[in-house]
Length: 473
Image 1: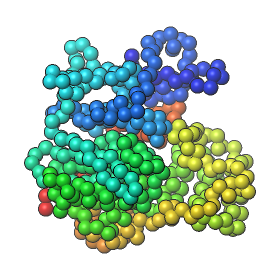
Image 2: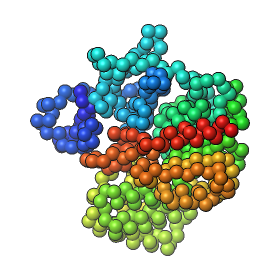
Image 3: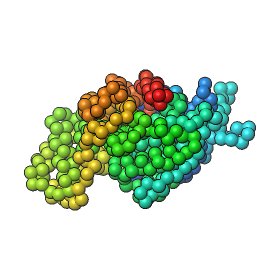
Image 4: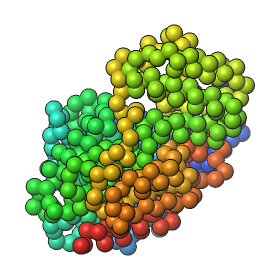
């Protein structure tokens, strides 16, 4: 098995199977009979909900460690098991209970060590590595109440005696279960900072409905801070937030009304949600080879969609503009260059192409209750943030307008002396370097699928060093 995954169309149409070859970054390629004859195939196994929850974590020791984690839902297009080592993150494809094949072709098994504790066996034959659970970090489950919901969480404390400074990790829009956030916290743990990872409401082991707003996440963050402040191995005077992506609208709300020790933003927006989504959708269309006139029409349509949804009521001038933009899109000859990714198939409102329904059908679906999220400007909150801040952006970020966000946040923060804002030119949204030479899917999909994923040089060291300096004061 060399990491190749064959995906057969599920509609029974008789169309050829498609081949994904992660090692060669070739995806959705027709599988010829000759190729099929050369492959040794195994069916993929679908883990049961919660099956891997207690296995996620760090294995090995400080000299040789790996992180096993997961995205157990389809928020990135499909459920994923992920293995991190150093700056790299690899997919691990389940082929049987407790058995996986990594994207580089290596076998990975969930086993027990001699003492009966959880362990990972990687590879086979003379090169096999057996890694026990990393004893540097201590994990324990906790719960806290946010509004009417009980949220399930894991507190991870670093090596050494406490009490430790601590950070609550705020989710992006996708990946609402806690284990995804493990990918972000290694620098904090290395800096001696404890981290709280939680399941957003309605996901994982948390109660409530899965629908959430940036205001709900701010409420959850404050409740989490109050909860960990009472832990005996946490220093209540050195608490902060680490926010990724969508969490970057919630974090400054909290920091503006609480006395925090630090605030970290990774790929966070300095513009409204409407402006950030406009950036993402038009960027994806451009990257797909859609021409500037069509991209302009799509941008205008989305601008109108967001304006109507934000206001919650129809406005004749906006509706007229929307109708004109959709007419232009319907006649565009290059719109089919955009291939709808898996996550947008699951939720069409995330597609880069606006709904092409007639305006008299579309507008009633957009209006009703005003949506305060879309127009919320985070710089109004940043103007009241006085704690030390570190913000990191990828200059090639698909999701967030990095340079504009950096400029607006820098201008809003009241004390530039305690603000550190860094942009990494070649990095993407997760501060990873997007792979080149991808065939069959977009660079965005390749990143979301963690294909040949690697963090950009220096980003994690910068976060570790900054946290170490700020929390030691």
